[in-house]
Image 1 (cartoon, rainbow, N blue to C red):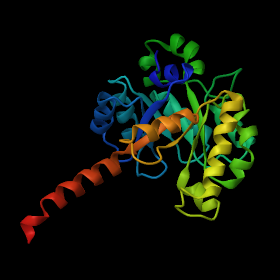
Image 2 (cartoon, helix red, strand yellow):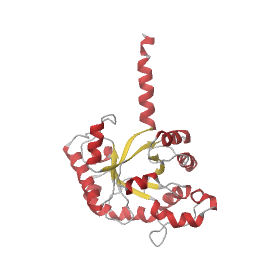
Image 3 (tube, one colour):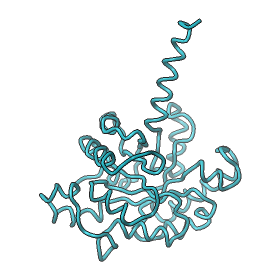
Image 4 (cartoon, helix red, strand yellow):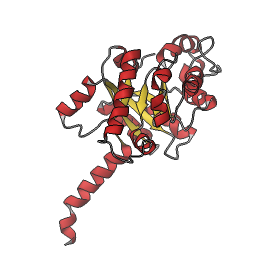
Amino acid sequence: MNSRLKNLLAADKPAFGIQLRFGSPAIAELAGLAGFDWILIDTEHAPQTPVTVQAQIQAACCTPATPIVRITRTDPDLIKLYLDMGALGIVAPFVNTPEEAKLGADACRYPPRGTRGWGPHRAAGYGLFEEEYTAEIDDMVIYAPIIESSEAVAHIDDIMAVEGVDGCIVGPVDLCISLGIPFRFDHPKYLGALRRVREAGQRTGKPVGHPLLGSMDDEENVRRQVDEGVRLLLVGGDEPVLKDGFRRAAEALAFLRS
């Protein structure tokens, strides 16, 4: 077993990922082949099903990218299902307390380290390498809460200190809403919260991530965020990439309608 994402983070190197909502295995495979380090399959904000999620995991596994599933809530049964499919990480929304973080972290590992029930199918090669998978997956899997409320920021040191929490990702829109400054990503309150989360990551030696601020074409801007401690970089998704591409094409040809 191998996780490109885990290897990069262990070497304290940035890893860039893309979030997918359309449920297309072809898009997941293309993203991995294009060079993304990790694929975040979003079941929280998109009508994904277990069948479509497994298909995207299978597609991502045809590439060097690491498949991660963004679940709808901290539910040990959901975590078990997606890990049994072969996901190598779980991202959980609205984790506000260390108790919630521990529930998710424990669900990602087998006893005695956690509470995950045994029964991998595709993850263990449909039974071909059950013992190898069981021996390795606890160290391979990544569990990262999404920090997206003022309550979570207030508890960030305790959340990051939980054993089995491998890092965290900031949810910028919901965090801004929680702080009373919707979509104000340049506001001092948001930037201060972001700094507090990054500092907690540095104190615990665990990676912090958030969607890339500004343009990915601005190398100085990207390097600055990495220098500030960001390691899990989300740099778009299938929705915005297709939206921007379609819009540019339509606008370029708009002269034909005049």
